[in-house]
Length: 218
Image (cartoon, rainbow, N blue to C red; front, side, top):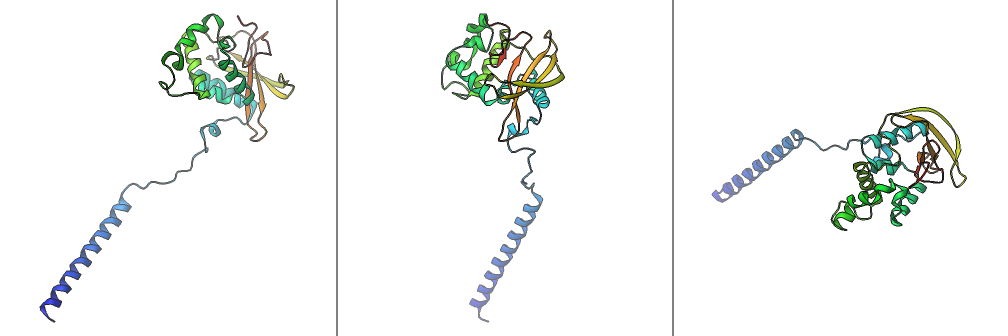
């Protein structure tokens, strides 16, 4: 074998050894490194993770969200019609339908979009977080029309009707801090079978008011 051929052979052997070492190192590193696995989620979305299988469970989810100050989830559990009504009340500046009227001006001044302007907040026109911001302001100014921060105890269910004449299930409950029976009117979403809250009715409340059926709006 000529010197030239020996040199070529040595170079090829060196290249081969480098490749073998590189592949081995890569393989070792791959198997030793933490692997990113697809962990199955309990639910595809946050909404689907909520237990809305029955009227009673829906009420518990609704009240639990209110207690932990998660008003975005409260809004999410409202029925589609109630969400639409609440958003119309906001658009038409009917704040007294959502918070105590005597505190409405102070509450509105706390809402980020009004206090800081469009583009300055974590949301612009996103109704769920707008409602959350509104309720946080209502909390600050003691302006809740219905205060569900107390622990609820479901006492029974019965058939009911929505203002539009649709079938509903009324869940009666005692809520700490509220005198008398509180009724959570719920409806079922046909496509998913999930239950949602149409309105919360206080004793003597005007059932024409959505979402908070209270005896009077000042």
